[in-house]
Image (cartoon, rainbow, N blue to C red; front, side):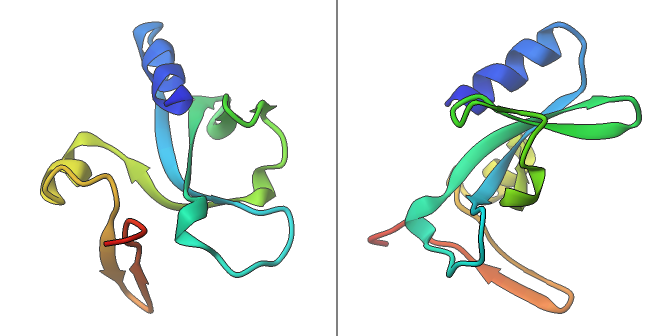
Length: 101
């Protein structure tokens, strides 16, 4: 929950921020749902800048991060309070389920 704490602290200081959910892979790999990860971004100088408090990454290795969604209350509420998302989009179908469900 480091990402949520970071995002909350940034917002409390009036710095635009958001938390994201996805995967962190430095190389090509087959994505495993068990490896889901949350990180944050803050907005400065006309761009979103990556911060991964748990992974100790501050504005580095952004190409290793594969975002599947931006975490927000509307998305979670629309999904019945479940933090995992099932969504279909144009040209891409993504299904991510909690392991064991």
